[in-house]
Image 1 (tube, rainbow, N blue to C red):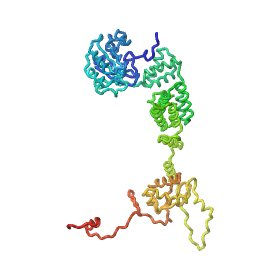
Image 2: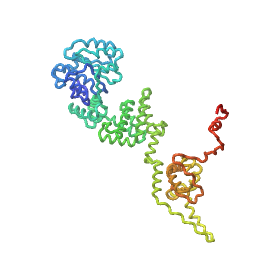
Image 3: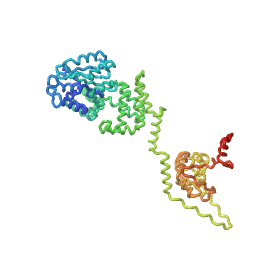
Image 4: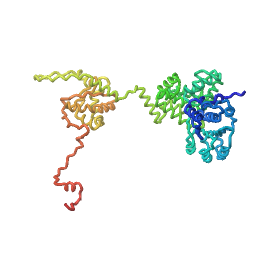
Length: 546
């Protein structure tokens, strides 16, 4: 006896054998049991999810001689004929190859004829491939078919089906099988078929199936024939590892190994994108990845090393490469160029590459920025005890006081740590920093001066305590301007400078900024009446009537 593929041998024959489509099997089974079958159904969904199998099960259940709770018995003559494809009650039509109006006219003409069984079932596969004329020829019969006829239309692209056809049917949407459901089904098939396949091979086959039972069974057939897992999946992981390590050579070696094994570069690019997608989901939404825990941990580690911006950029770049491969004379070169650009973002001037380089710099700096550093330094300054007040000057006794040694005055001109000196602060303050401050901060800080630089901050003197309290409210703007000028945090300590000769400025309103230099003297004029106001505003005007 000739060998039969697994996906044909294990095609579902009852509603209870459908995997991952409980919402469809339950509704159809209840309709058959309660004799409430509609005259037309539309089954849509990805390939290999059970659309055609469900249509055949429905046809068997409708004509079964001994149905059991809406399920076909699978043993009567009608069920056996439907299973073997020899039933006169079930007519299957492939709309992809019979999409003309003549095929639909022939179907409509035969629909009214009698049938050996109770129901005549028409299964039209890939119905979206019908031409406009063929779809219109089907419309009237689809709306009011003979009483013994049921139409089941199947498609992978329901958006292309005419709305007038969709409105005449009950629409069921088939779903991709979850990874755990598909892996469990594959283990059952392997056990029932007597295949010796390791668990890791089952998990690999389930991932290759991508939610399609037929694709997964075909992959299981191939793995069983090969005697285990092939090594083609390893270079894909090697390519992604090269992206994580920014090692272009490692990625190119992985491409060479995969293409040497007969892999098409386009399919290889799709496999890399799928791997990157799982890597992205491993950290963002692990439950959507549908992978074992150990696999999720490995992918999460790759995601951390690669970084979210680099992962998104890699998927976008490879997606663009897939489009370019359609017209490329050598698709492998296009793929290799894309991988080199991903491994060397410094050689790529695209905005996405620049974002990735910035993200790498941020991660290298442990996420530290100047503004948080300034805020922390400011907190430290406020918590530090204030410096002791300077000693009062001794009274004059007629003899001049001895001059202080120059060695003791020098430390005041030198900053402790990495703070700028008082002279550097004063020069930068008058030349650049003061003019760059916001208007309110500039008006408040114009009347102060730098007194000294101690071990923790630059001491800035202000005329009085009230003015100092107002300056504290905009202190952050001044510290940010100083940090931008010197390239490092420069915290301030505000003090009252009693020896300052600068007069205190007028009080500044909180929400209004007043610049004295912008004020102008009013023109003295004696205005006697509103008419004089108007005459002054509009030169050349004449008074017609007062």
